[in-house]
Image 1 (cartoon, rainbow, N blue to C red):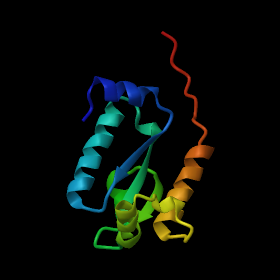
Image 2: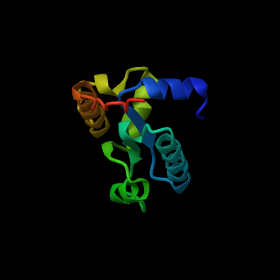
Image 3: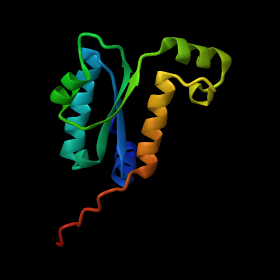
Image 4: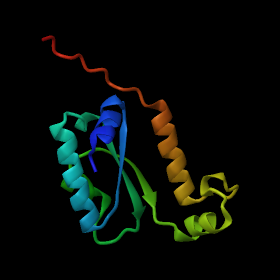
Amino acid sequence: SFDDITILAIDSSNLILMVTGLDVSILRNSKISLKVLESIKQISKVKLVINRDSKGSISVSDVEKILQCPIAAVIPSDWKTVGTALNTGIPFVQNVKRTRAGAAIDALTKEVIEFRPVIEKKEEE
């Protein structure tokens, strides 16, 4: 939801990672959220993260076309890795054995760390 506190946090942010999925209902809600962000002039800060990519009927390229927003990362569906992490209490990104999900999170982390915001000049009144 977009309450006053959320909008203040968004306005104060340099980067917004919006997590979406490959289900029609999730994409519908993501599209609505992106329209809200566009209406409050925050859309340029948004990068999408696709969670649980399972190579199903909706593809990553479909999401790009539908949402018209840059995709920062695609986290593969890896229930074995994630389920084990949930059950053991050990984050899967700390696992010695590299996994596809861990590698995707690692790549996203590096992108966020290296992110440099574009400073937009505000119009003088």
